[in-house]
Image (cartoon, rainbow, N blue to C red; front, side, top):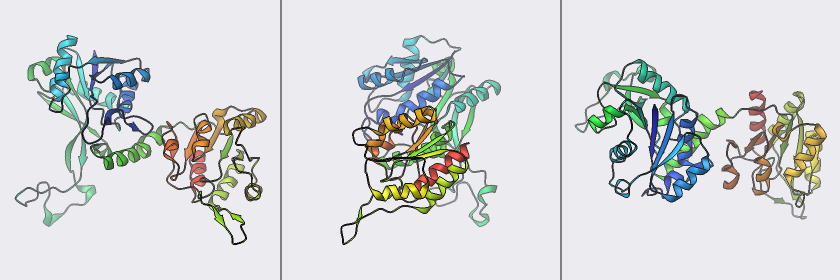
Length: 385
């Protein structure tokens, strides 16, 4: 049997409650557990913790392979080693010596199910006694005596011709229970390496690391994994999406809004692809009416304080004979949240409020509202088609 073990605890000095802090809208440990759940190689998952909060969150995942292991308080201290809790788990669970053991780290959210599957195949087919994950770094290193470690500075190689060095990324390790009990270590015998993408080397130890890791997660994994449903209706908010969220006033008290011509071209692309369009906004101004006419949208709803954007979107869907799954929507603030959580594909501009950015599977665009974010979203949808 292939058994995965992920040790986590409440404590963390650098980032409090790091393992359950929201990362891309989900608790950090969710992502590695999700990948294990989706892996065909892994039969059972055990999460070893002494933390009540973590246990409660794990149960909410509702993953069929997941079990909780109550690690002892002695093995949940700052000075406790991963090997100590790993050996405690094997001993208390009385695992069979032939079981294949996967030691997984919660702080490696960029690991994917295919990594577990491919590494498992490599471990099995190559006859390794144990295996670890690494990335290949093509950085130039120097020794303490100021001599180069891995290259000749007088013949500096081009990056594409440089083999680089293998560096542990700590995502996971594979061994057999028998070998672990014999060596008291996660690695032993003939050790193999499974290479992962270089971006998976990011370590989440400080707040700055967290920001970088989230950016990588969205760019490299989440946005690429989003299945684009058949979009038949494109809806957008106004302030903060079609505009920059700023309010401009003339000397006579007149109100102005800044729109982007690139977004306008995007609406033209949607019409050519026979995708209906609409604007739904809480405000009610002639400025928006004029812009809607210029964009030739099929639907314009203004002044929705009491009706709610989701109800309006459902009304339009009924008229068009489509499902809310066939709708794409871009919004940036709390009054957009309900609709963003229901549509087939949702996106938010770079300048959106945090609660919107934390919506699971929402596409966090690179551009801000009023600066081409709507066009960016439209192009993503059309490319996905």
